[in-house]
Image (cartoon, rainbow, N blue to C red):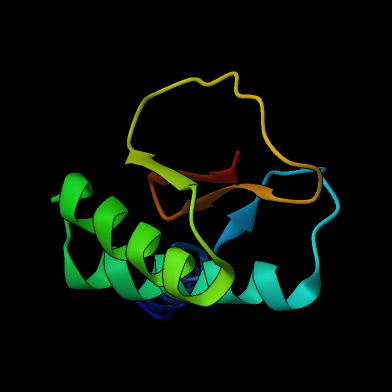
Length: 102
């Protein structure tokens, strides 16, 4: 029983911690802002990826200027051209998120 609870706690922690997949260098402030926006919007709109992407994009446009693009979903691939130091690919639980500025 105790093992089941510890495994469940470990899985809950894994789902609540974003896993950053980008190797692109990015300013720490921008990276942390994107991670906070992703966590907030994925938790606020579970399963509604279009609304989630819109919320993240609007937050990034307000904070860092126009032309941000955001993709949110469970199964996709991507190949994008972006400004240097302005792309982040991460997973938050089972949801993949790509944010980039072009």
